[in-house]
Length: 131
Image 1 (cartoon, rainbow, N blue to C red):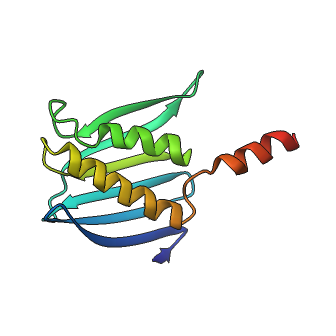
Image 2: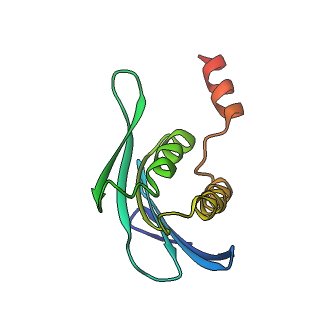
């Protein structure tokens, strides 16, 4: 992990289901940028996800790439719920590979937990009871 001007950068690679997945995480103060690449350095589809007012639901939009291939869209939504931060997710996972997408998300969440970017329910409960 490296830190430049307030950004924390983490890169790692995992071999899952006979493919190599590359992960690149950039943590800013109020958002996380994630790139997940499968076998190549191709950028893939880009999604932006954030909570919206007034009811704090998560909205996801496709910034780059077609809407017919939503690989990564659900992952971006769940990452917002888990981190409480805005998520920008570039995803280059084959379109018809839900098992690979789920495995990639598990590895990513595992890494985000290890980095301390995932909210824990115990912390939320302690914070709300202290108020």
